Image (cartoon, rainbow, N blue to C red; front, side, top):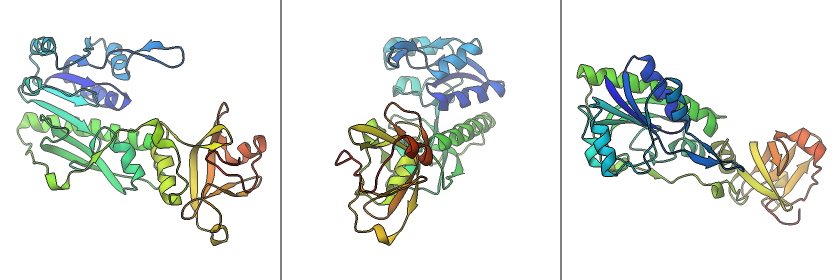
Length: 315
């Protein structure tokens, strides 16, 4: 099948590679323009562009896919299908209707749940036991198109945003190739989404990582895992930012009288903090300007005493 592929981050690379391995003719790869990144602001291309160039594919990087000139260019490729995976721009109706089989999207949730840009992290943050991937026939709305096929993925107890990202990227690539085969065979039966069941999730921001110690321990622990590796959960130790990469929930009534954010136990091996309900043992930490390390190594280099208040007060 002649395919135009649209994608930008690592998540989309898995699908592109799977299409190539399945011997589809990827006639064009569309990705976001190169952008400055890091302290040096050096120009870097997207992971999808890197993968496409490694295969000798033609790459197109429009600033606005909705510009009329984009539709004109894409029409010349006479694609049977467009496959979209985390592209980052909304396609106009003209492009959606252009290919013989339209446009399909690889979405990392079980639609209609978690429409929007960050379904992977929110599945962890919200404590879901299962999530999955949907291959959707794209329509004009945000993730509103008909469901073509879905696959369920279990969420492990220690799942992070990063580990679930990889699981769903791999499952999405597999399911996309399977769905295209079914489209070609004429065996796919589109199913309309149940609008009454639809939920939307907002984009992840760095500010979301700021820990509110008034919240329950289990909720904070899920936030820490969901925002790992980006943008990470953090608090303040004195005037410095303290990133927290791992934590374990504890329920010990002897500490219940302490104010949330208070270090209730700090010895050679563990650092335990009171929350709004229960305690958190911080297992992986990274102080501003330092490397990430386990609690015992952190405490050897940065002694913390019982009664220290995290969050910028009395530290």
